[in-house]
Length: 178
Image (cartoon, rainbow, N blue to C red; front, side, top):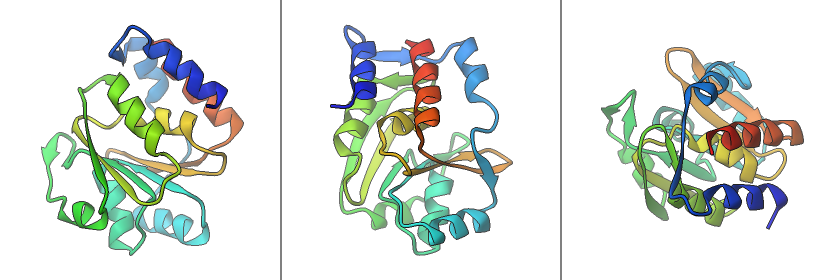
């Protein structure tokens, strides 16, 4: 187990979740990578053979509609709290794990499911609640050079390549929640 994963595990000791607060909400808002259009996102994925994780339905559907199935997709079948037709996502994944994660929280269950499945081929994680806070978890738990993408409402797609600096930043944000 990696040191960063152990740190996350310690945060959850004796707790079922950690919660977003005013300080961490401010740290999470804004851009943490390049804001791309759908076309720009597809070009990025087409150029790279990296492991890809998408967090959010529209980002995942953008990739799938271009014929690119992310290695891990975390979704809730909603966009901006409205239900969507997620048949494209469901059809793309033979293996789908289900997890509960209320809005504004990162549950121990979400952490466990992501941790257990990261690095595996083609896994979908269907969240009952909200998946938004899965991105920092994925950054901390992923190998270097993994591409992680999530939607930024009304702006586009935020996409990053995992590096030591990005892992440290994401872990710092999560620790401030804990």
